[in-house]
Image 1 (spheres, one colour):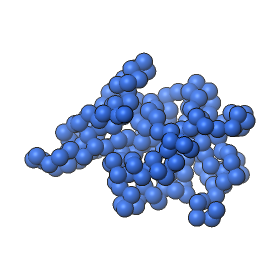
Image 2 (image 1 turned 90 degrees about the horizontal axis):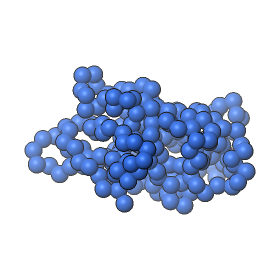
Image 3 (image 1 turned 60 degrees about the vertical axis):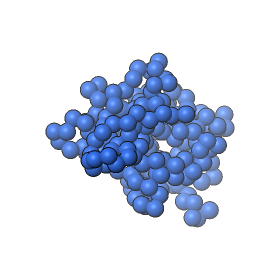
Image 4 (image 1 turned 90 degrees about the vertical axis):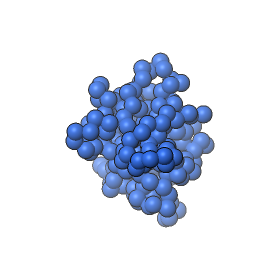
Length: 202
């Protein structure tokens, strides 16, 4: 279980330094951070950073669920790329993008970094079929672009340019998926010719 570390900051998640890869227990804990809205003695609202690489990205078929306040709160923070390579494949009858949990294989995958509240994180767990379809695991992400406010070090990435985030990857896949083409960036309308089939059309 993840035990969040709370940080007092009025309007955004404080960036926590990324631990080394062998600090897996602390790494999992640090992926969920606390935010205190406003001032005074209001209770801290726990927030998490999530790295999305597929249909949840801007301009992709499922991005709307991140914008729906009924699901919780989500705020775009920037763009990044996984520190380690992973196989990102498009598979199944509905052309779903899958990040196979095989670090060290495939390509470094580009995506977007969001900060979400506990309600949105719980919604995403259900939306992604976690833990049966996907598993929410920690991942190290190199920041490529950042939209945090200038002059506020609490919002800037760690000095080494990496952040720890949650990502929805899968360890449950057909063996032949590993041999599918590996992508470093996903677009449902990309040249691969495998457009995602939205849930409402199934």
